[in-house]
Image (cartoon, helix red, strand yellow):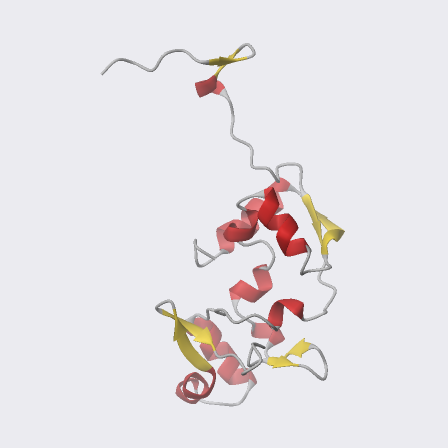
Length: 157
């Protein structure tokens, strides 16, 4: 097989160019506590065994009981159930808060720094139309964003 031809952009070989994600200059986000990410559309709220154990403790239930009452399976993974209107079963509409906030699943605590959302600027901007905290408040630099992405337990999140 012949070696790849030299391809240049400006005075650099393409092979020498460093990849930088679109968010390499950082992003602003602060949770405003509106609960929009906890309600509405149906989907999956994936939950780990560790989260199940912690949440069952908060709710003073045995893990098996918590799982029987609050957990289902979505896309072959354990997921918190949803109410008929699409709200997460842990979302308390009266207070606009999560009933297990201190031990909520990683999927919830990492929002909006999910691989699927950070995959493109377009996805980030689409999500910002639903989440008023995107583009506001705290500044996250590229290193912090990369560290949050590393914490994602699900690469397809």
